[in-house]
Length: 218
Ligand code: DC
Image (cartoon, rainbow, N blue to C red; front, side):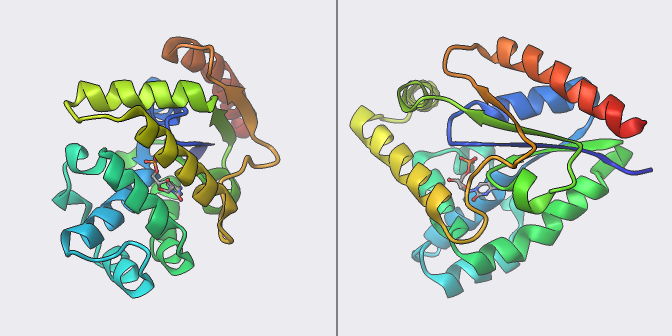
C-alpha cells in the first residue's frame, strides 16, 4: 500500500512542529521532525569542539548520525538551532540525510499507513509527491514571543534581542541558501498562525489534510 505523505514546512517557531505532531496523532501516521536531524548533526559537531560551517566536519557527523545519542533537551536549545541552520546550508549534508527522510515517508515505521514530515524543504525537495503540503508562517514578533516562552519554560536564560537576532539570521540563512531553500511548494496550502492558537491551526489544517487524503485515495 502506498504511504500517505503529509509535508509541513515553515519558518522557525512558526508552529509547524506542534501542528505536525497533532496531525500525525489524529490520523495515526508516523512523525519525523526533520529539523531534529540537522540539530543532531550541528550538536555533534559542537560536542567535538568543531565548527558547524566546516563542510568536512559536518558531513562526517551527518554520515555517522545516531539520533539515539541525543535527548530532546540536547536538541531544542537556541545554540542547537543555530548550528542546525549552519550545517543545513551545506549541500553535501543535505544529500547525506535525504534518502533516510524519503524512506521514512514512503515506508513509515510500525506499518503506519502514512507519515507526517516537518521541515523547510519537505514539500519542495524531500517529498514533492506528498498528498498534502502545508506551509506555516507567523510574524517575526509572534515567533520571538513564542520562542522566548519555550526557552524560559525550560529554564534557559533568555535575552530577547538575542532570540530575535538568531531567528532573523536563521530565516535569512534558511531561505537564501542555494540548495533546498525554505519556500512554499507551488501546491502548498499556506497558513499564517500569527493570530491563531494551536487548536485553531490544527482544526483548519485537519480539514485540508482530510480532504487531500480522501482525494489521494480515489
Ligand atoms: O525546524 P527547526 O527549527 O528544528 O530546524 C532547525 C534548522 O534546520 C533550521 O534552521 C533549518 C534546518 N532545516 C532544514 O534546512 N531543512 C529541514 N527540512 C529542516 C530543518
